[in-house]
Image (cartoon, rainbow, N blue to C red; front, side):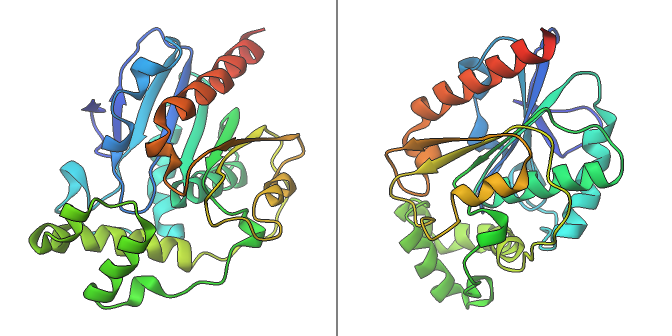
Amino acid sequence: MTPQTGTPWLVEQPKPAARLRLYCFSYAGGSASMFHNWGAALNPEVEVCAVQLPGRGARLAEAPIANMQTLLQALVPVIARRNDRPFVFFGHSVGALVAFELTRYLRLHGMSLPIHLIVSGCQAPQFRSPPKGYHQLKDDAFISVLREYNGTPEQVLENRELMDLLLPAIRADFSLAENYRYRGGPVLNLPITLFAGEHDDIRAEGQVNGWSLETSQPLHTFWFDGGHFFVDTHRRQVLEQLDMALSAAIVEQYA
């Protein structure tokens, strides 16, 4: 993958003839590398653009963004400048929350919207669990929390020098999620597809089917036999389902 010319925000897998662009938003502490080679597994008419937030990858030296409004204001011009083809948002965990709020922000400002929103491993915005303040923990306690999430390799967690580099971005992402407050507004008039893990801890009342409250169109939900990081552990199945959703979106868009 190579960064898009003129902006560090996107790492793309170029397909000049593609008819649909897929913007991907990673989970907390993740980076654009999470979506490496996704383009090769998807419909040839889909171009993958992975969003690279400050504080990770080639942007490691930049200060991470811990405020949702600040992040949205930075992302909107990036998306608005690339309006040459229809696009879809995909996000996992906090990335899904960012994708959802970015869609609402674009609508609020009269800009082009994604034709489909695909949210993965994320509680419905109106039914989020009370924040636990993990992003405010001291380093050792925060690392213990990350270990319980079982999404970071143990050899990484035990490498304190590496963790010192990674923790600021992970804290910022946790802050985005934990300080998030839902604000009511008109529902979206676009399809929402939800990917969920059978063993993920987002099964409280409303946290799955509550996504249906955010769209005037039917919610489509697909379950995967995995925990919160099923997007990694069940990558093949996720990409197969994603490919079907994107292919259907292309057919509908160009029918």
